[in-house]
Image (tube, rainbow, N blue to C red; front, side, top):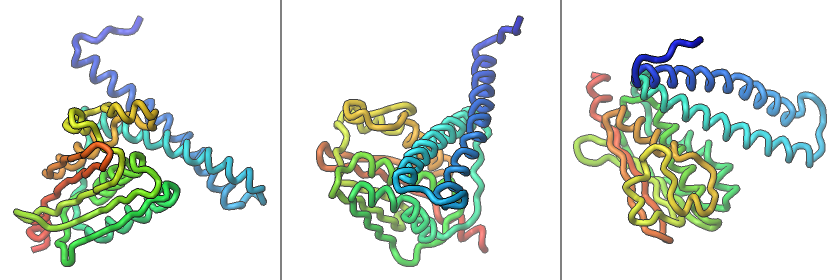
Length: 247
C-alpha cells in the first residue's frame, strides 16, 4: 500500500514531481513525432502529394501546440519548485526582436495581419536570459495575433526609459478585454470571457509565464485594453546591469 503524505506540503511536492516527470515523458516521444514530420515535409523519404503535405502541416501545428502546453506546465512547476533559473548574459536587444519577428512571421501572414517593429536607436545591451525573454516577447505577440481579426495591426516598440530600463511594448488592434478583466490577465489559468465565448485555443498560462520571466529579471509587466479597439501589453527589463558587468 502506498505511503500517504504527511501534510499538504508533501502533497504539493509529490504532485509537482509527478507532473514534471509526466511532462518530460510526454515531451520526448512528441519531439520524435515532430522530427519525423519534418523528414516527410522535406521529402527526404520520397515525394508527397499536395494534400498529404497539407495534412502533415496540420499534424505539425497541433504537435507544436501540444509541445508548447507541456513546456508551459514544466515552467510553472519549475517556478513553484524553486528550480526555475534565469541564465544571465549580455545580449543585443535588436537581435532578439529580429529573431522573434522571424519566428512569428508565418502566423502574422496566416492571419493576414500587419506587424510593425520600432526599436529605438543605440539601445544598451541587456544582462538577462535571452532565451526566456525571447519566449516572453513571442508569447505576447502570439497572444495579440490570436485576438486580432484579419486586416488588423500589431506594433512592437522597444525603447529606453527612466532608470536605465528597456521597455518592450506590443500593441494590437484586436477585440480588447472587458475593463473588469484587465487586472486578471497575468493570473494563472485566466481566460477572458471573450476568449471563452469564442472558444479560442489556450489554457491561460502564457501571460502568467511572461510575468514570472519578467519578474525573475527584476522587471515589471502590465497591460491596458479598450474593448473592440485593442490591447497593449508591456514589460521592462533593467539594462544598467549589463554595462556594470562589462566594465
